[in-house]
Image 1 (cartoon, helix red, strand yellow):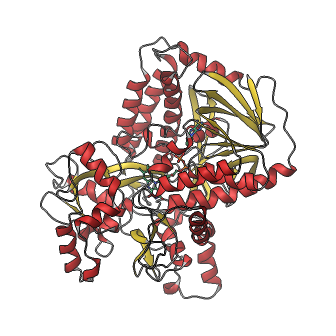
Image 2 (tube, rainbow, N blue to C red):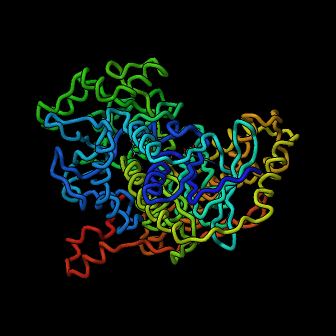
Length: 614
Ligand SMILES: Cc1cc2nc3c(=O)[nH]c(=O)nc-3n(C[C@H](O)[C@H](O)[C@H](O)COP(=O)(O)OP(=O)(O)OC[C@H]3O[C@@H](n4cnc5c(N)ncnc54)[C@H](O)[C@@H]3O)c2cc1C
């Protein structure tokens, strides 16, 4: 196997990976970014709505309000100190992106323009605030292009279309990764002092998802297989507005601009579920409402979808009812200008023109709140006490800091990437300066090479595509927006059966080496099966409802027993693993504790977990 040697190996070239690469290289490290996609094809590039920062360009705003919204939106499972860092660092991160050349939309005073987004408020929940900075509905695309240019300028080494398939650990310290060069099928070893997981999410566990085909959770699965825990895996966000059946995302920015959700009897039903935030209530609330409307027989044509209406006449009618200023009213040209990509998707894929007709939408699997546990410097943790694994870092969707708690607010993922990507990059540069090279084990890569041979030789009857389809269907039905013990057990049993077929009865058509997508997709399916399994298992054990985890048999949030993070570990053989889940990692409640210490009476404590009706 060819061996490459670099101080810092970064797995993934999305927003988190590029930010980490930029800062590690600025800190003097020799950096290699290994990515299965060409960098600017990473999913970050599809992020539409915006990046949240309390710039206060249009409304009065402060980082502490952003912190409060993040903690509350996360249903009090977010670590409060980390949420504060997120909100505070967001301001300088956005300004830094601007200085790097990111073409944000502007206000008439030429400042960065901001829009409303669900759950983002002023003065601790008083009213919605314009906080999401945007470049039309292509914010992520602009972030990715900007960061990639900066990395090239900083001479970061890129290994594009190299897929990482294993982590090399020597005596508990990271020593590198094993990757396959997709163009040749050859195995390579990247020998490093530190490795940074920035490999994104795993929405492809579900059948209706906003996530690209590549989002198969490889990094998280590799970490799990190499003995690292995954944190808070039971929390997976369904975004309320995916295009019906296709799952393609319609940004919350549409509702931020005034769009409303309408059921089959023409009612703006969110007025009933969330009288003040209405259509901009947090995503878990809106997704549940759409399911409940469907159950009550009020989805359009009884097919499980509702309408998202951003036609100016509808929006302006509701604006008038709410007594909004006439200058807020919208017209067709504004919709065209602010949401060009959304209009394009709907016109192309649906034949629906959103300025003339409403869009058919349903909840779509969107975002992993859980992932590889880290501290606020992106160092990977191996236990509930916060012990760090030397040389291991993670940030972005694959990581769990945790700033999003049980439910992420819109625009906070892009903030997470740049804030914790940067912190991690700096920390890693500092670490590699002092760290010694761990020697590579003689048989590095042998185990995973053998596993790939097993998959390639597969001559059974089960094709990966069929197994993936069955996994996605059971996850959608049994481990989706609403869960019960019965559905979760069903999901776990189905997954066990699929795993059995994956390891004992797999069939691969393509036996070649060059760009063998059949082989790579089969391996990715193995990753998805592991992540689906840990999601269902932690969801079964968490006997309460919180954020995106909604148990119909345990409808209340139960802070007394469950205000804690989960950590799940995988042991045993890949084909027949066993799992151990703990729920003893403490949630950081430092802001609430500071309020208590300052003698604030209970009714003035902003960061105290508040009662919530589900
Ligand atoms: C349609 C859509 C719209 C969104 N809109 C917003 C928004 O407006 N605001 C917001 O805050 N958030 C939004 N999000 C969420 C946000 O975009 C993502 O959570 C975030 O971009 C993830 O970034 P990342 O850097 O962690 O990973 P990604 O951008 O997903 O990148 C993952 C990288 O890892 C690489 N990789 C994966 N596996 C391997 C492997 N085995 N070997 C090598 N490389 C690997 C890939 O090549 C890729 O470069 C949106 C998400 C979607 C899907």
